Length: 187
Image (tube, rainbow, N blue to C red; front, side, top):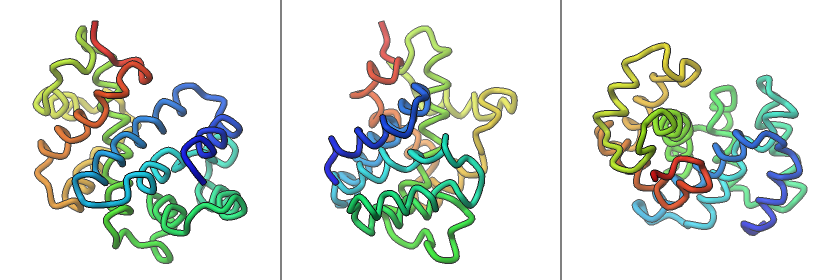
C-alpha cells in the first residue's frame, strides 16, 4: 500500500476531521523519527497514518486495532506496519511487543502529538515559537487535554531513550511542516 492508498483508506473509514488530523500528525512525527533513527520513512509514515483508521468503527478494545489489522492485511499492507499498529495498543503487547524502533516510535508519538496539537490550538501563535517548556507546563495541568495519558507520554520518551524535552522538541519540529493541514499554523 502506498501513501495515496493509505489516505484513501483513512477517508473511507474516518469521517471525523479531528481524527484525520490526528493521524496526519502522527504520520508526520513517524516520518521525522524514521529519518532520525534510520528507518524506512514511507513504512513508518504509513504506520502513523493508518494507526487509528479503525477507531471510529471499532472503538473498544480489543476490536480497535484487531479489526483494522484484518482489513490492512487484506489490502496487502506490510506486516511490519500492521505489527507497529497492533503494538500501539496495550492489549496486543503479548503478541506484538514494543521491541522494534518503529513500534517504540509509534507508541511514543501517538499521545504526544495529540497533546502538542491541543496545546498549539490555545496559543495565540499556535505552533510557531512553541518550546518544550510550554508543553511541559500544560502537561502539569490535569484538566487540560485530560484524555491524554501523561504516563504514556513519559513512557514513550523513555522507550526512545530521550529526555522528555528532546522528544517534545522532535515532535514539534515534525508537526511544523504540516501545521496548516492540522490547523495550528501561526499567523
